[in-house]
Length: 96
Image (tube, rainbow, N blue to C red; front, top):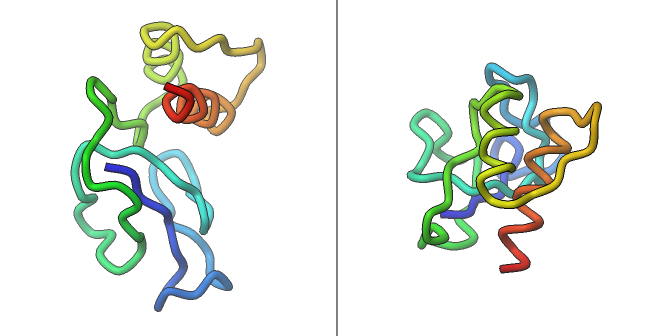
């Protein structure tokens, strides 16, 4: 499923969600395998059905993200951050 992060009480003026890889900013759209536990009220569902074969990108380290990118045929530039890699994967998924 695809979700969009929102601030506290649905506001775009508050900070995003903080996890193991830092903040996921308000407005970020991500693909997840299932509804994130503990995030109730902090996201809107954009699409209920996950893309076929899509792997969730949340809570992945850089090596895992690079592995997913390679498996999905996404080219990643040297020095790319985790957010850059996620964005490239999500862009490629949307184009399919």
